[in-house]
Length: 212
Image 1 (cartoon, rainbow, N blue to C red):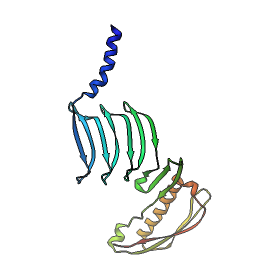
Image 2: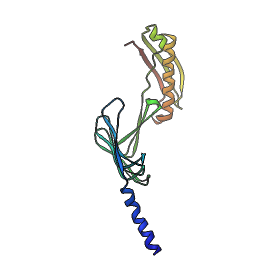
Image 3: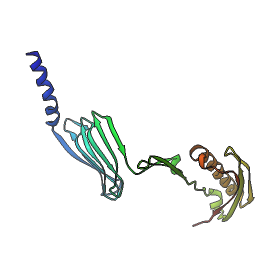
Image 4: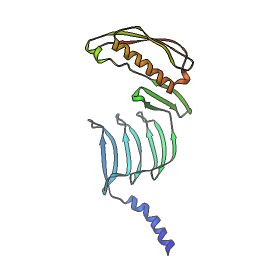
């Protein structure tokens, strides 16, 4: 009798979960009519997702889809890029990741957007990162309507360190300082994310400050 009771309890648990009353919700992008997410929550707990879930890119294409059970991911989930190409297939059980398969090139944005690391999961190789450091226009130079070019020269040694960093064409103290700061930051990010591509030698780079 005890064994039968336990069996009935095991059978009834998923039925109870599926029979929960839910309420559909939509979330929109800020200041937009574009839908960002659609999902259901339990009527007894508006913070607990339960049922089908979908998220969308800003262009309206599907970003991800799957299911929640009591606010935990359950079963198969699929992620897409903004052009509808499958990027990831995952399987969850009670919120725990069971299997994970990624496709194509994945990017990770770091350092406030100045560094993008990349990995090609189809070829299983790490790609060279993208490092883009915009030079800041000094407020004082902007106020004084200072325009022109700063040229910075430096050398890279065998450890990928900057040596002999100097201004070879000056514009203003503030603009020179920002240009030097940009090169130092470039060196820091190169050593951290891109050192295998580092090359020794001399460099000269112009920084243009122009009011729009």
